[in-house]
Length: 230
Length: 240
Ligand SMILES: Nc1ncnc2c1ncn2[C@@H]1O[C@H](COP(=O)(O)OP(=O)(O)OP(=O)(O)O)[C@@H](O)[C@H]1O
Ligand SMILES: [Mg+2]
Image 1: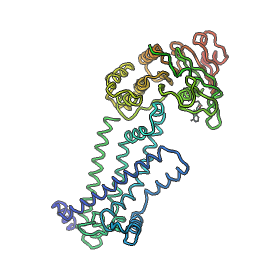
Image 2 (image 1 turned 90 degrees about the vertical axis):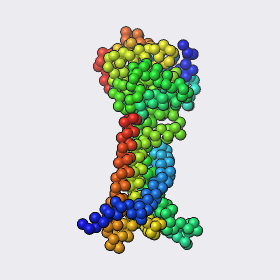
Image 3 (image 1 turned 45 degrees about the horizontal axis):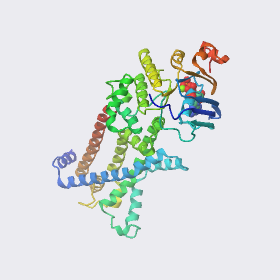
Image 4 (image 1 turned 120 degrees about the vertical axis):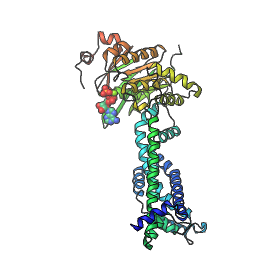
């Protein structure tokens, strides 16, 4: 039980090194979810509400991209950003920005695919009423996103879960540099392989707690919102 | 009293609509003229809903042409419909009406008074704050009518507007329909209630299997129906 005890001690003592790691992890995952939403939500809405040749193929591709293997994305971003790569001059490799880029690529298809389904389902339901009310295309999109907002929160949570849990992409492009690019998941991977189980477990506990807290918060917001909007 | 509607007559000229090669409207010819309500009757599946949707401009016919006040192409804005199964937006009852007001271009400062007025017209005063989707079926039907009236339409389509209402609400809605018609708003409605058809209609349109069998002034329809089918329908033994 020694491991568990010292893990708890680390967490409870709010060890500064540990707190820095937790903070960086959160910042990276939240930035990635925010960027992925800016990309994925319009794409999902556009695919949901327009008809064009090859649409089915786009939907299948989006759905498939939800399962992108993180290490492969990490490798691709690594090749892009490495000194000899096309974007090598940006000097981003092994920085938190590179990690945000990699996670954005992982999360954007999840948000696009799930938002597409959510918005399209609501569109099928609302189509006649909105047509009868002579609602224009711009307002139509705004209405659907607004009225689907509680389901879309769940979509964002799925994206956040993916970002917070993954290690394969960010360890490749971030490098797990102490005090700079070390996150909870990369540290857990490293400490476990080094045999420092207390730190790994402490981080694991914090990670799971955060994910639960975020979901609980979203759930509460959703319930409160639904009570007023139905 | 307003001017006679500009979007009338609505003329359906030789309209056909197909679903999987079956004609659900079969070369329909119909003029919707200004005046008392036109009531569309006929057995289940006769094509009443499809007819209303074509006249509303929501379904593009495969054959034929619809004109509104002599114009074809884009249907006029001043029209509204209450669907057979209306869909409530995920908002409060009042916000559903506000949405219709805003999409009709009504200034925001007029909303509160209009919402109150419309809720009271359909007998839903006091329910404005309730989430619309938690209202009962009949209440949703009435809210949908309020939402349609919010557009201040020239033509109002009602697809079985009293089908899920209790007797008191039915009477109230029939009174609303009469009041609406008295303001020179053209009402085009479907119903399965022959008593209601008799009470409200200026003209009866009888449909059967995608065709308009007759369109006749109401008194004539019930006293001396032209077609064999009409006699059987009134007697209650015309089936799909
Ligand atoms: N999109 C569609 N696809 C296939 N069949 C359809 C479609 N829309 C309507 N139909 C068919 O066309 C026929 C007419 O439908 P419609 O809804 O207009 O009938 P209705 O007279 O309104 O019937 P009810 O009294 O039951 O409301 C029905 O047989 C229906 O099944
Ligand atoms: Mg119908």
